[in-house]
Amino acid sequence: TRKESSAASDVYKRQPITHALKDVSDPSLLALSAIVLAVGAPLMEEIVFRGVLYSNARRWFPKWYALAASSLFFAVVHANLLSFIPLAALGALFAEVYDRTRNLAVPVIMHGFFNLSSFLMLVFAPDVPI
Image (cartoon, rainbow, N blue to C red; front, top):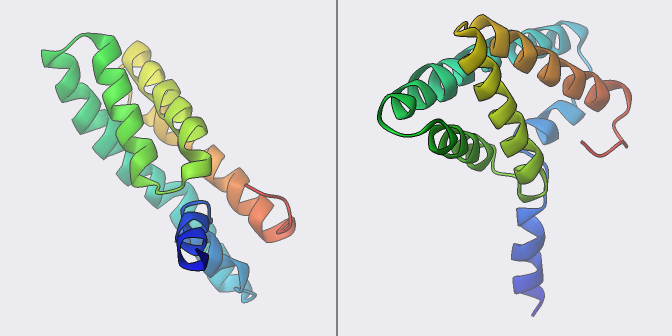
């Protein structure tokens, strides 16, 4: 039915932040958004997903389990079915880097560059799917 196909297509839509940013044209608001997405979000997410979830799971479970669980949860929280596998892989990469360096700043910086590149694509190449 039409309602079912509409509900199914909702699963494949972009994250809400991408919809909100598509209509922003004020340079100061774009700059603030870039800072939040490139600094604030990565800092908070890495503290939660690698600093708390991964680190605690790593104390009690094998590394592969902690890495998989934190990465899958990272992907689920971003609520985008099309991006689920790439985000889970990215979460696994961030967890592995954190595990090897024992320095949360490293995945925070990586995450920041990832978010900033996505933001720049959204602003300067809005028709490119990200």
